[in-house]
Image (cartoon, rainbow, N blue to C red; front, side):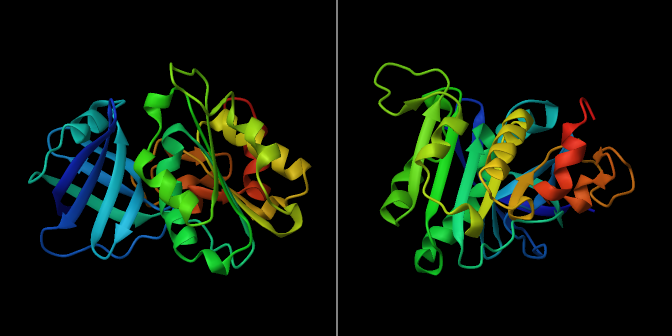
Length: 264
């Protein structure tokens, strides 16, 4: 059953995308790990899966882009409202364990990577090189603009690109893979974390594997239609993987074959 969470704050990230901070009304769910997801219930609309974009004690942060009935209802949520939350579900991002860290995010895919980036820059001395590559369609669709400067000041190499620049845009233009040549990492000792549109994930993962990053050290976050969160309904099946349990975070060594099958 969903556990009631109260909306503490609702802030617009971009047009149609909001970040919600939630606190439990009574009993909190078990702690979430970066990369895991919750099933979030908007009363009267239904529930849908959303990766957690921040965790602070019992407080959960979700970044929601309005794209369907449930997400549209969540995007309209205001402080003081109540939502239902189930979870945590699925696998999370593994600890980089002192190696070079390479994060590649496309669009809303930065949301599930945000906790990993925040944790990494907060303990910057524990890792090698840290590069964060971010792509979006337009400058106005970039998430967490207020945090990117802080990540840079903490010692991360943060590069941003857009597909369609607007007047005044001074950063890169093009797909996010164009930024790989300027990222600083040693492939043999790198942990890579990738999330975004599926075509972007395939291209980035293949490029990194071709550069020598071990396939088991490339983690990708995959999205299918989650429903039960417990591996029973089959909605999220990707070949042999039930992504609500085996994913959403999967190594490229496991994801490479099913993602190479067209329309699987």
